[in-house]
Image (cartoon, rainbow, N blue to C red; front, side, top):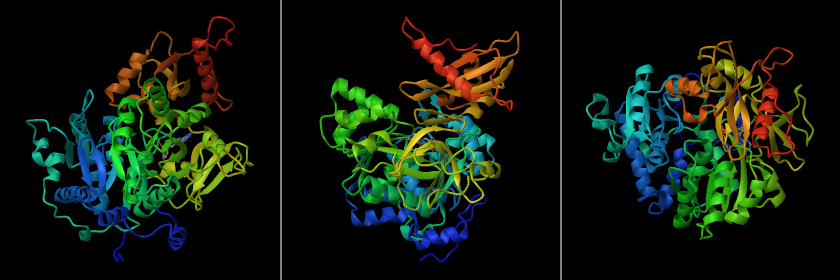
Length: 569
Ligand code: OOB
């Protein structure tokens, strides 16, 4: 039993004491570290394979030793329990070893996405007060070492830049100790008995999709994240026979912990890391490794289904479950999963903020194909309310609010935003509009948050609009979702400009690119209009703009003959 007090990090919003006590009494929170769950599997099956990354295959014992090396390397860099490090790595065994190293020693990884660039990484490091940043050397056309160096210049708390891959030659910052590879050469000095995080200690920080500007940080404790994982494991039926393919970026909550790579390791299974979900590589990896379950967004599911139909690469019958979530899966697509891929579909409607809903593997097909499932825990509290905050009856769409043992009560160091995103009694306003069926399953009908969901990648409208306002001559800017057959949504930017000025998509690209913004946030269509539609209270009428772009897209694709109504100018 731990006798010390939890590591205190200024800016974490705790659950109220009475609620925390209730969650402990009920056994949801076990007051033990997340790492200790994996340590159990290391003891039980040291020689079983835990992790595969291309030619690298690690047993539980080997993975645990490498995690220990990472933990030691962090300590050698004077990084202490409770310190934050920005972690940006693609799917590779090093990502898992370092994450486990952090979990073992109580260092808090801030889970950046591989697509993030200087703009996002600087913000994350600054808000987190991070002391180190870990990046890969090169990602396609971007030298991430240079990006990280720029971030380090701007964020005073950052003391170390760690690189996975080649160090740049000739600069002092890239001394051998800054190579992530160097950490695996050290003799294992760190032992599990050296340090044991407590249940109430912070395990990691996840990123919100972001509706107001840049992503917010979501603090997940050992207690709550372990519970999240155990519940997902139970619902998705993960056990030691599970072979999980990490195809989505594994720093995201879905492939990380719902149940994801961590769930697989907690269950004693084997995780296979793949740097990209391209159908060619993923379907081959599924056959080669005997993958039993994986997680994708609907756009990827669609690409896999098409590829499989055309090429029939998937020959084995190992894949039992395909989890799909992150954005709304069209019912027609849902119906094609099992016939083409031979795997049972599991719809997942979750959020980094906590609440995870899943269809159950033995649900009726109608539920699996047309709903986004129900909470993974009986302790999840759900409210669906109308515009005045009154409960919406079953079957009627309303705003989704939630509370529970793995849904934190506030973002990290964001009191103003917390005042809007959480009610005074701790309910999180998800911004999603759902309909609850009498059987308890939820159907996602839309959302009332100002966000674009580009195939699972979340873009804050406000963040894009702020860039548009930096352009000469821009009067008003509004970023809205336009329908897309593959991604579900893409981003369209509406502008009004001062007479005599003109603004092009290339100008928008230039300003966002110069700021080092992640590529997926850059608008893909620009509409310059004469007047911005406004609501009665004078706010930009985004609904009118969404209707407008829907008509324009339909107009562009209309066959000759009767045409839809021409969009307004
Ligand atoms: C997952 O997490 P986030 O934090 O990237 O995004 C959460 C938001 C939700 O509030 C909702 O707007 C949307 O993404 N969403 C879905 C959905 N799953 C997520 N919308 C419709 N249908 C779905 N199935 O996206 C996430 C986290 C854990 C597990 C799965 C997804």
